[in-house]
Image (tube, rainbow, N blue to C red; front, side, top):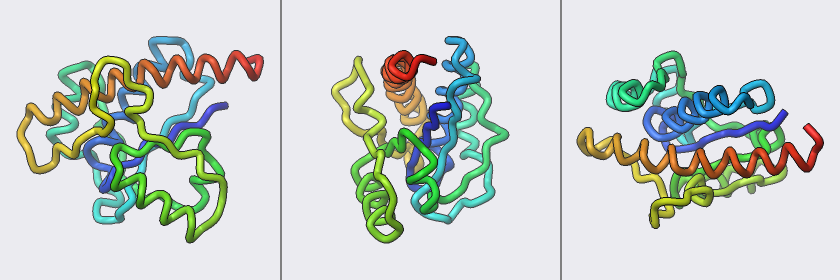
Length: 162
């Protein structure tokens, strides 16, 4: 089983969107039984809350329902549990590094956009203070990166003989 964790600041916009998109893509690709997906925030402001309604709406327009997800904060065990810990931007990457330094463990951290193929952007921008276009753009970036991530997961599965 491969484990993927998406991380943004509050776990109500970008990371739950990526969580839902990857789950949907894994289902389409017949890989949902081989990959576990979760999302978390580096901050605890929204713990237990559903994704932002604007994120839910944008995802649903593309056929992805994220309404049942609940925000949680990254914890020390995540560094041992997950094969991929994918930060949405540099600030969350730095926060993950700080958490890792405090808690220990193996830091399997990357930027989600490292798997992107179609955009020059290296970060997934936070759409929270913007309009609907920002949420759609986040989906574009996440969908693109999830396609590259799935290719990487397939390679990892092939190497492990699964």
